[in-house]
Image (cartoon, rainbow, N blue to C red; front, side, top):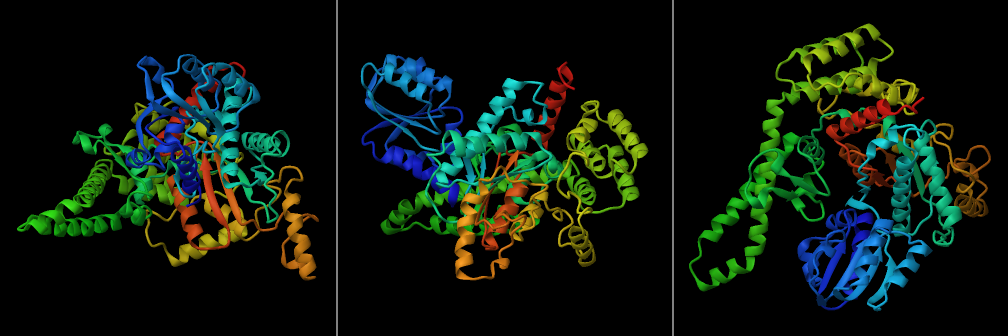
Length: 596
């Protein structure tokens, strides 16, 4: 429960030590950090009777001196200015200021100068500058996510802002975990290298004392990757429950907005999908779509039994029992309605868009060879009137990524057919994707056809067959985790940054050497401690993660390999968001005269 627990602990500490009625004031980013780990009812239990956004609270002039204001904000210059204005004319009796990351000295001076009426009771840093959507999965919800695809010369200030936000988020995760990592990055990615360097500079130079936790065990590993090394995973349709909901409807901060797909009763327009608050979802979030239907039917049957027993109220005791159990009954009713609605709506979309037909070809393109058959299958689907524009685009992209070097003539034919069949198709978008994430740009063995071990694994899987044709794809992240577990993540592809890794690892090696001369059992290379196996690995994907990848992380952690993985990214992608970022990057690159 690592990240969720860390974030909850911070919020508990903010609220429980301040007695009396409170107003909680957040910004657009901390509201996400709080909402995914704390429910409205839990806030009420802590005597929080009002939740407001910092940029709108000043619109009201009404004095509320009976309330104590608890601010939880990012330490941005905008938020400091909001506070400065609000402290000049305080509306609340007390001000308790908490910041989600490191304050600058100048910001502390501004706050001190602004507090002329001495209403500020405390100023603290509570490092929850990330959105812990699951125990081992976090996001930063960065709005301009497309910037990672652009060369630095296109928009230097915006890219610096993007990098600063990523470094702040990564720093907060390690401060919350009270650890300082060894840092590695993807060699072929300029943005991954830049973020790695700026993170190392912050942790080992600028704020070295803050990150020095005096721990002697082996340091955790921070591995920074680029989304473009695996552009296939965010382009695929998904068939496990959580990933499928995000792909077809969308999940934002563990909430699903159903208003975009139809008219629903007010209490069902926005539903919560959280493994922390929903036991059915926790048990089924990684299950296949076919199994979900059967499991929901069992849940409906159980609910009908409970509802039936509630109808036979004959005595005072029966009535008292019903009233006592009513909150649980109501919660069960809401849960049943929520999951039945989601599965019903997704089933309609699968049928309308012929997604089973589309997805079978997608999986073949992602997992198996056979260029001729793939070309024919994609051509047939482009001609199918029931296939949507976005599905046509994704199919051509998946074909292009797989066969960009093998069949340029046929690829051009698909480009032309796509342009003629899909009115929404943006000219040159597939070519832009290849320029961004083609074979020459990638580090990992995306299709398992470079490395001998991967080729052998794919052959074995082909001979054995697959359980489900729609879920046979495994993200590149799965291979990366396997390489880390086996100590085979190549230094040449994922170099270490500086010599920082030696500080934690050499202590361990000295201890091993004193215990035994069989130090060879610990893999080392080039005379350093680079291959000492970490116990905690935080993998950050610049450009965003997917729920398919977070599923891989959760399943890997359940295997008890001795390594605990945590996954983070700038956003959580589905195919729509990935394509939107790609289009925005293409538009920005075209309009820039600076691009080389």
